[in-house]
Picture (spheres, rainbow, N blue to C red):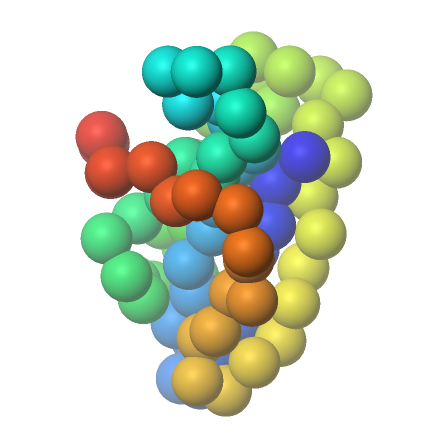
Length: 77
């Protein structure tokens, strides 16, 4: 599963469901904070090529909040 968060002014961020070193659910960021929505869409398209069954949940929040409670992994672009 992936989550894309829309913010104001065509800015977005995103996360891909992943696992940490202990096998616990975690989220891997697709960008370093809010970026142009096009960049997030581009990263999601790459992920869909790798996993064609990928579900993408899109959330609109003006502040760009994700509300994820699980661990957020360090960013590796």
